[in-house]
Amino acid sequence: MQLWTFEHFVTLIPTVIIMILITFLLSKLLKNKSYKVRMIPFQINAGLLLLSEILKQVISIIKGYDLYHIPLHVCSLFIFLVPLMAFYRGKGEKVIRSLTCTVSLSLCIFMTVYPNLIYSDMSIANFFKDYFEFHTVFFHNLVIFEFMLIIGLNLHSTKGLKHGKYVLIASSIYASIAGIVSQILKTNFSNFYTCNIGPVNDFVNIVKNSLGYGAGQTIYVIILLLLHVAFFYGSYKLYCLLDFLLVKIRSKKQKN
Image 1 (cartoon, one colour):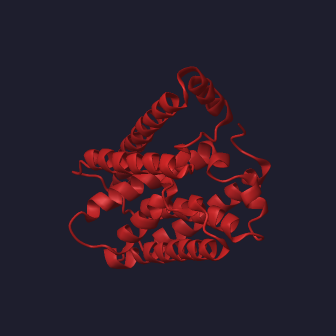
Image 2 (cartoon, rainbow, N blue to C red; image 1 turned 90 degrees about the vertical axis):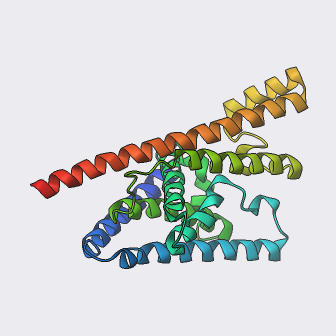
Image 3 (cartoon, one colour; image 1 turned 180 degrees about the vertical axis):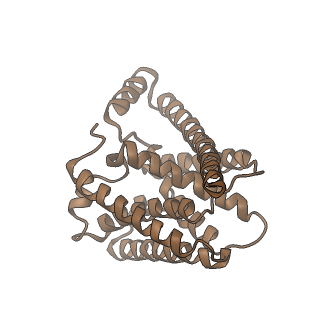
């Protein structure tokens, strides 16, 4: 259970620094621009994300489709949320933004604490050798950049919004679908079929041996579903707190 590898250290940290610098420059350049103009970086980001995913699906089909490539992983949510946030204007727009911010922050937390769970050192090593490995690294880093842009371009306001219930509903729906389909296809979407964390998986196997596979697997899926929902809701609350602190900081700067 290695949280960080040397490969993550020498690639992820420099990449994050570069993304922070780009975000800072864009925040200065677009500071007084209209909402429409400030959305352009998000639209470019969404286009790159969608293009990379389409290529992944096409290549997978050509090679003989791998069920693991069905977009039912947690990070697959970005395929839908990021373009919606970038291009959709209308009823529910602020809810979509809250969901996008919440899930993006969730990934940032994991990438800070346990990047090796998101993508392995082998994905980094094969970045230029295999498109699927390239996509894994590129896709997740693009999402981190998305969250930085949301903060840097001041598009994160939660003032007067009470979107916690939508986070609970959306995360429950996602987790239920991913959990059920994982069992039907015997494919490990978001760890719903087996756990990628060694010690946890060993404990789950002990429970299954004790209670029987059916009962043990059902308990595992239910607990994982609840953990998904709780983590997303916790990320939403953290996102609200972060927004509150950023508003305070900006308010003090304006007064000075």
